Image 1: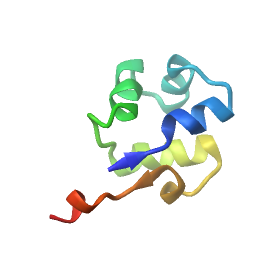
Image 2: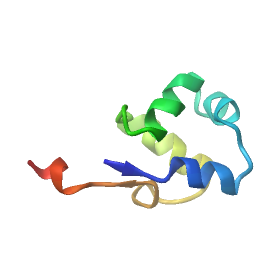
Image 3: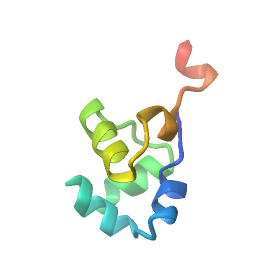
Image 4: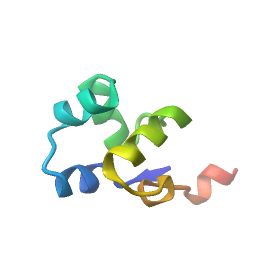
Length: 68
């Protein structure tokens, strides 16, 4: 799954640590998501969408492999 967390974070001028605090997760979790190594729970995806004030689908996009 692709995500635009890094882009959305930059638009709000947030560090990984800032976003982690707002989302109530570790900075390592934010880093892992940005690198595509961690897929967030539904709750975390919804938190991020609220923080960025966008729809979840604006942050996360399924890739072809996600359908296999």
